[in-house]
Amino acid sequence: MWMDRTSYAEQLLPKDPNLTQVLHVLDAHGLPQMSVRPMLGQLLTVLSKGCQRALEIGTYAGYSGICIARGLTPEGRLVTIEQRANHAELAARNFRDAGLAEVVEIRVGDALEQLESLMKESGEPFDLVFIDADKPRYGKYLETVLPLCRVGAWIVCDNVLARDRVLDPNDQNPTPAAMRRFNQGLFHHPRLTSALLPIYDGIALARVGPTSG
Image (cartoon, rainbow, N blue to C red):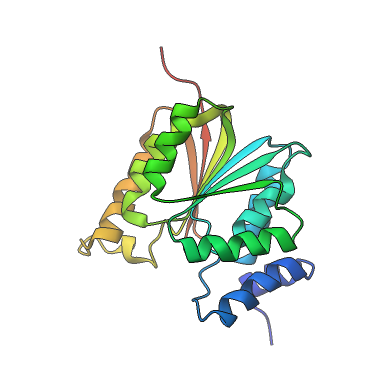
């Protein structure tokens, strides 16, 4: 029997005990398996190669953070924001077990408040941003992170198809309605060159350009 395309692609990836541990930890704590899928994790590693600073909105248990942190330069750092303290604690343990405790800084709290704090700190700009948090606020996250990004930075957003609910224009519930607005804005933003990959639950990629004027 033939495999489907996703299964074929994922079986090409080598076994990864650190990422497998994240999934086991979630099961052990009765938490849903909401980590990114394996090939998206690999894509994040590919995009983070050579990056100095990365930002993640939505840590969960650390699966995607591990993937991002692995690609960074030896001096690179990942700042990851998680609203729930219990998730942050699990992620910290998983980062430590993956040998990445010194690479990753976890900030606990509301994402927009944490982003505002980052803006006030005037640190080095980010080379990669991954957004995987509450969907109705994706648009606000995007506008807030843009000033924090270096020209040429990648912005990656997960779940932009909202379980295919964006396909139904009559579905005006908050999440699909917000994601339709977000996707439109992503492709019409003057500073972004964007693509939407219709795999998994939809992955959006955008490259940050210079400000106009």
